[in-house]
Length: 239
Image 1 (cartoon, rainbow, N blue to C red):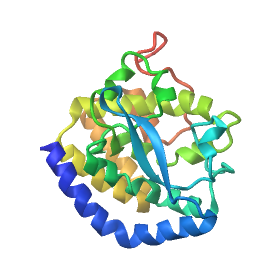
Image 2: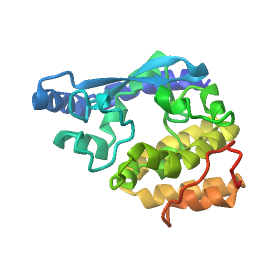
Image 3: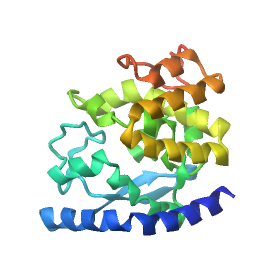
Image 4: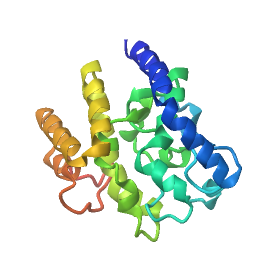
């Protein structure tokens, strides 16, 4: 049922967003004359590598810098790319991957292979289902660029501040996944573009009903600064 829903919504969604995406594609192409699409290898279900499509928001060959995480003030982001990222236009085209079956509408966000090699045995469970365009973490860390913007080492900051909670939220989704939860996550992902506070409040309420650990609730509320924490499954974890 989930795959059928993904297929129907992705085809319909590509048609609906075309009036917005097509002008964005033209603007990106006019900016540097290169392909407006960025093909990003990602790890999918069962550790299978697939090519995730994104609307290009960074300079050509930005991925060759060796840095995977991107801060809001990253010099690799183009002026048009700033707008594209602000309104998640770069991720909308991933409906193509959903239609193909590489991804789902809802599920843990796909990672680069270099990142998955750091996974604990517990985190490897994130690769048991198709990665998604959105999930709890996509709402909670929609400001990921701002979190990393002043970091000397964005990848290190990501692994210490974001990954521990992002992985836990992904695992919580897997444990509680349902079609109804998927519809709610899609709805509040759209809401978060206009009112992040409303979306965060919903995430908090939903997680509270699931009786998740208080540390996860605190981190997900985003009311205080994120602190370094071990990933789930680490021998050092305090959860």
